[in-house]
Image 1: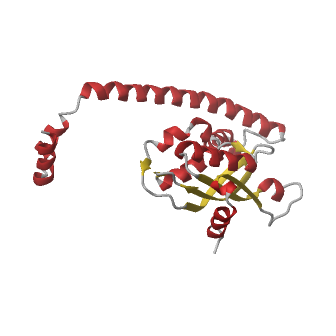
Image 2: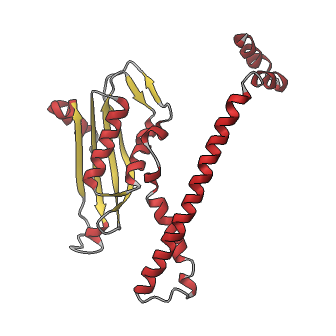
Image 3: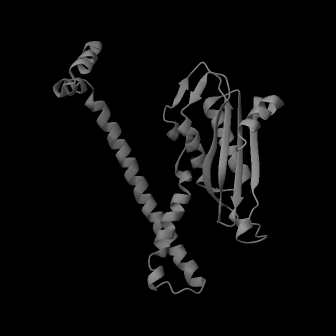
Length: 235
């Protein structure tokens, strides 16, 4: 019966046929799930507003203690804007790898190296709350399972949108991919510029920090690791 209806859809492209086909789904099983998701989103939105208000008050205090007039035109909405920005910069705390993968892992008879390089990354240094940013290179050796390529960039986003140090960020990305895919190996390299070294302190404009995390065959086999490093070199 299902096959017959699919054939009708493909052959007729008729709105009535589509309507009858969709009516075959159990609406009673869909509605509770939609209601549950809506309820969770409403709770999250309410919680975000409460936190934003507290962060806004904190920024107002910081500006005042710096000697600024928080009532002047240019600063009237600055605490609110800064609060919204900080929530965006740290939105990774509200996300999980399981949520973003969303059934995007597929069985595939492929065991050769997969590399996604030059993934742009922005994060906040947890020591000074100033940005560090750069590029992430990811490689993994599938063990008959592959993931949608965009999901690798999403994993980077989850962990970079938190207060971080680059060393930990690199390890977290590699570990998350390893746990999700169970591959034969994972390698992650991050190249980043840190504003805490550029805008303050030693003030070295052209300095970059490079960190790596290698697991499985990338750690055990020097040739595999070398192949990854060669392929991720910028041309």
